[in-house]
Image 1: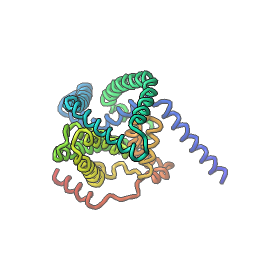
Image 2 (image 1 turned 180 degrees about the vertical axis):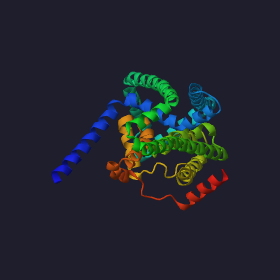
Image 3 (image 1 turned 90 degrees about the vertical axis):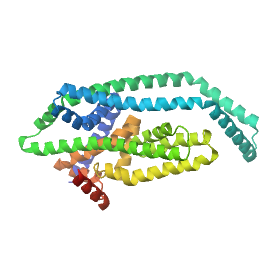
Image 4 (image 1 turned 90 degrees about the horizontal axis):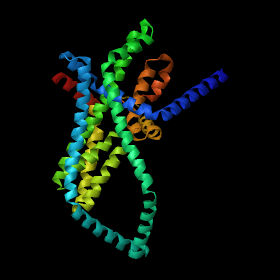
Length: 362
């Protein structure tokens, strides 16, 4: 019996290692495919509604793709329109940066005894070293942009064909199982579709909430280009945990170099307030326990996703882990793994009451 248990453990670890290797090796193929699958889960209700109104599958799929492109284009237009205002303020920003640099040089000289000339010489040496590798960084950046555009085209193509053939994909999974298990498989597929779509919609609603609160807060404290700063601060929060810190950097820098000296702390206060409300009110309401993932495995999913797929993995591995938990919960032999991945915390009563009242109103 111990030898059998050891053999089973080795088999599970070997399967896990092989799966991670395949995920890493096939990331260029899998990332656009998984992005398209999550987006298809989000847009499937829209496609069904269009088909009820008389549109065919091809037309409904094309309209969903166009809707996604319009949404992305609107975000890019808003950022571009606001970014033009910053270019007009560059002379003032440069003057403020020079003043801050002079203050920093004076502080370093007093604190460490390094003269400003030596500081400038050190910076020039670092710039020279950076310039030697600038061509390599530029080439890498251009490849990254080309890869991003190519990946976007693949995502849109995959998305269209997934929406068009979603009924066939469902029938395929049903045919893999015996007829007596069709009800169980159908329930599992419905849960996966619901979790995938609700996760992404919840993230987008969270970003929208943060954009509005940031924008209003930045306008109240008099921060210039409030809408642009709000968008830049909110969009990185699509990445769990890390995104909130990354998004906060740019508004704080702009408050320091583009605003007055008294705007830094109010800007930080707006960011902290918005994040506190989003984490404790908005996300529990719009997402709640739909993923039903243990916090430790949520963090593991984000870290593992970054290691294997980079930033896209940080976004995708959380819903993928939730889908894995659903599959394990519907396979008797994998129930222990579903129990391990599941969240042991219960949904707060106030969230249940709000949701029940909203359903009654609707």
